[in-house]
Image (cartoon, rainbow, N blue to C red):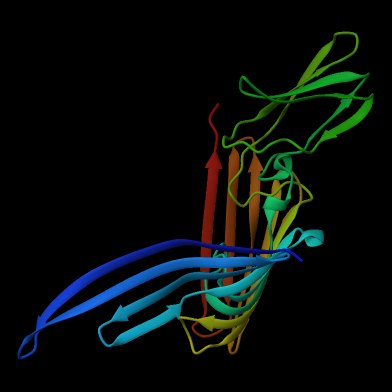
Length: 276
C-alpha cells in the first residue's frame, strides 16, 4: 500500500496590540492558517483550514473542516465523510457533519462534460458530417448509410445554433440546423447528476439531523428536469423545475415549496438567449 503525504499553504502573521488597563501591556499574537492533508490508497484526508492562535498566555488550535473523501469510479461519484458543505445549487448551502455523495463530472471524458446537444440525421451513403457554430468548425466525422447520432460534441462557452453539413459520397451536400442555447443547469440528453447528503447541521440550528437529495436529468436537447428534497425534524422542502431551450434561447425555472410554517416559496430563474 502506498502512502502519500501532502501538506501545503501555510501563512503566518504576527501582530502587536497595545491597550491600557491601569498600565500599558503588549499582547503578542501569532496566527497560522494551514491547509493540510494526506492520501492513503484511494482515500484522502484533509484539514481545511487548520488554524492556531498563539498568545502570551497560551495557544488555541481549531479546524473549520476535517474530512476524508474518495472517488467511487463505478458511480462516477465522490463520497465525503466528515465536515463539509452542500453545494447550494437548489437549496441554501449548509455546513454539515456527516456523509455526502455527489456526481463528479471530472470523471467524464472531456467530450462529455458540460452541455451540448445530440445531433441526429440520416445519411444516404458513406458521408462526411461537419458540425459548425457560426464560422467555427466544432466536429467532423464519417458515418455509414442510415440514421446517425453525434453525442460527444465538446461543450462551448457560447450559445448559437449549430449548422450540420452532410457531404455524401457522390459529392451532394445537405444541411440542417440544430438549436443550441444553454444555461448552467442544462444537461445532455440521457445524462444525469445527483447529490445526496445525510448529517447534522453546523453553524446554524441546534446540530439538527437533516437530509438533502437533488437530481437532474436531460430528457432531450430541449428539456432538462430538476428535482430535490430537504428533510429535517419539523421541516420539509420540495424543489421542482427544469430548463427549456429552443431557437430563441434557454430558460430555466426552479421552484422550492415548503408546507411547514411559516410556509413559503422560493424561485430561481435563469435565462440565456442568442442573437445571430
